[in-house]
Image 1 (cartoon, rainbow, N blue to C red):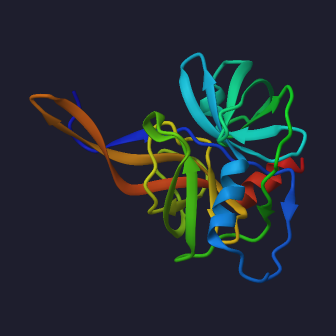
Image 2: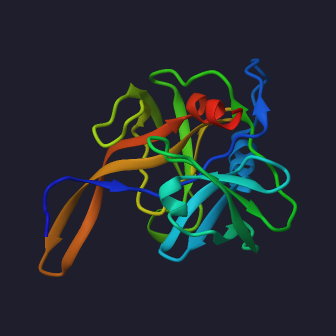
Length: 219
């Protein structure tokens, strides 16, 4: 068993048909911002496990990672309120982009707003996902900068937020609640004892940029 730091694909999700402007707005209560992000987030279950996603259209279009969709064409999405809905594959990007779109069969959806300008180094951000099977976890941190991960072919935001397996495809949000990225990978270490081994996140995580997402979705 490998006991050194390893690169693990995470599952998280993000959306982008509803594009938000970048004008400065009056401050919004943080609990309202977080609730909006939660309302636009889903847990995705599929044949190999589960991941995360973000609603980007009021019609129920959801963005997540291509490695979450895998080879499946049908999925079940669960909202923060516990409502389960069937969904189908709409589109999956070719390499090197790790993005996928699925569509829920029914339901009333609250789409996330996508920021059009790039995130800046040091900017505060938060992520929503379902790491290790937890229920819609929110983690806080910062955008470190735009980096070129060794295991990816396109530049991605390096973030110091804690994310883990099950978070892939989830949304990375700015402090106005706008989508600025889709979490998709990170670096963990493995700690072992006589009782077993556990993954320990190192804070080196990555999210596909909102700018790359927008370019793909307008094609």
